[in-house]
Amino acid sequence: MSAASAKYGPDVDKRKKVTSADILSRKQGDKIVTVTAYDYSMAKLVDGAGVDIILVGDSLGMVVLGYPDTTRVSLGDMVHHTAAVVRASPGALVVADLPFLAAGVSARDTIGNAGRLIREAGAEAVKLEGGVRVRDEIRALVDCQIPVMGHVGLTPQSVHAFGGFKIQGKTQEAADRVVRDAVAVQEGGAFAIVLEGIPSRLGERITHELDIPTIGIGAGPGCDGQVLVLHDMLHLFLDFTPKFAKVYADVGAATRDALVNYCKEVREGRFPADDHCY
Ligand code: KIV
Image (cartoon, rainbow, N blue to C red; front, top):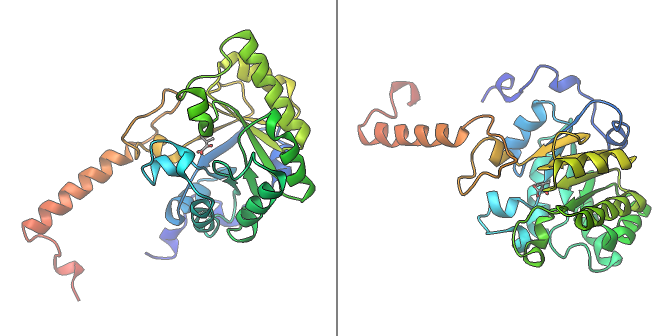
């Protein structure tokens, strides 16, 4: 690959690194664009496209590692994949997920685990799921100078407690509970919060009530930004596509077609041709 073809997007080299402070200041400004990535080559494309935040999500467990949910992802998995993304991301803010039980048990453990994502992998912020129950842990991380993104609503690590991937906040009481969680995340000192799998009206209400930016996924258009799982938007994850995801390009089909063509050409003796030989 030539040096020129390794760059994507017109202003990649001129872009200043996005910081958590920049994201916080975008509450009243331009929408915040967030996409997940888990490896070097994809992160290079995502960063080059000019997204604001690359989230190394623990959705890694489902779309890359093939687990049925995110609860089997280890901190070691997250450190390994975050480091690869960091090496490809000179522009976007890189946020790494604290996986199941790496947060929410004790502040001391959470600080140690977040510290690995920052020190060993080079993440610039961490994300953790939960609201009221993790407010003090968010505060402890922020006190240690670790920027934190919160995550409330349909938090995938709670899949067993919820009894499945179920939309949250559908009744008045449930909606009030999600609002209390979001407020707790803000009180803990998070610079932004992901709202997942809640009715659009609730997404709008929380966005209105909070001073920190909200980043929605299945939370409607009223949020301050949006996040999508890369493998959903490129149709690379074939098991299912959630209702909230939009397929921007069917890279899954293009990949399959390319591979079918490769099989054919090798079997017919058409590859390698003269151009590919020394
Ligand atoms: O793990 C992930 O990709 C996430 C997003 C769905 C927000 O947490």
